[in-house]
Length: 61
Ligand SMILES: [Zn+2]
Image (cartoon, rainbow, N blue to C red):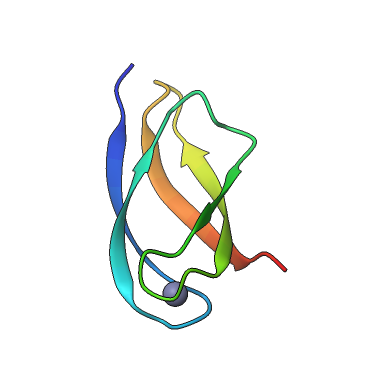
């Protein structure tokens, strides 16, 4: 198990940034955007080996 760095686009300001994802956080997590500081809800996509293969982003109000 290792952390993955995934490139995502902020749903608030649309800036691209790298987010570190812990494979154990399968239920998702909330983290502030590095650029605009608005909270983003991240939902990881995990494959059958437990590797994070993608990240869905939603604005968290
Ligand atoms: Zn942002």
